[in-house]
Amino acid sequence: MLPTLLAAAGGHLHFTDLHLDPVAINLGFFHIKWYSLAYISGILLGWLYLMKLLAAPGAPMAKRHADDLVFYATLGIILGGRLGYVLFYAPEMLTHPLQILMLWEGGMSFHGGVIGTSLAILWLARQHKLDWLRIHDYVVCCAPFGLFFGRLANFVNGELWGKPGDVPWAIVFPGTVRAGLIEPARHPSQLYEAGLEGLLLFVILWFFFWRTDARYQPGKLAGIFLLGYGLCRFFVEFFREPDRQLIWLVDRTGLHMGQWLCLPMIAGGILLIVTAKGRRKRVEAITGPSVA
Image (cartoon, rainbow, N blue to C red; front, side, top):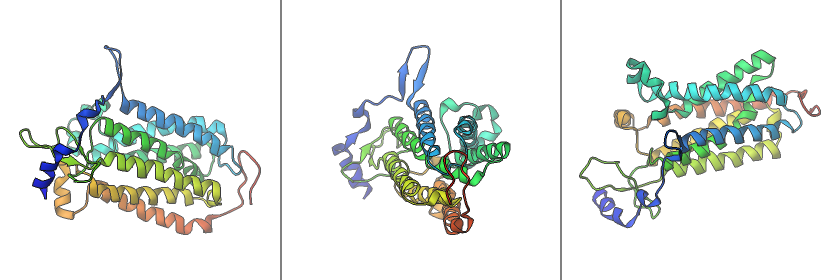
């Protein structure tokens, strides 16, 4: 099978032919990378969409709270994402603490970012005596923006590529094998994740927020997000090349680190969805009219 894929690689699109550059803006003395713009775009669009959600009846917080939330959540995303990467994917960095601060060299974990954002929400809710679970319901509806742009940035960077595949849309990424070997065509798993974790998950959450009463059942939207993301990521990992330093985990268990981290998300999502109706209560909106 592998020789066939290697031989077929010449007939597939080569990543270098796309002429993509990780640097979006080059000022000579200062570079702005697409990855940085992905974070900025995801946070900005997420904030704008959150404003729209809070304008609907039954909001768990006022728009003034959202400004503080964006600040705390941004810190949570960056700090949680980086520390999550170190703990889950590169624990050897703990022996070189300065490397942890080198964010420009890459290395962020979505699962760590989720934990960091959740802690930020809990802090905000405690400070203003708000319902932390319902805030989660609103915030998760905005998360797909960041997921979408982040995965597109991974593609532009030519990183986190997929496993070898002979599908017509497979792409030959450079530097995936040892020098001297023929590069095989691979699944563009970054685009799979952008479509599933970004676009599809946004549509699902949009439907349940605007077309059902899910937002009046604390934890239901958060559960849908956890379950949806967990299933999408778990599925895509079968087409994604595992991190080189964690191939041993795949050899021993058959699952990638990303899949193991998704299992608690899937279980937690199901639990939140199943128990959400029992938490339904009359919502006294911070903005907008009360809803029974």
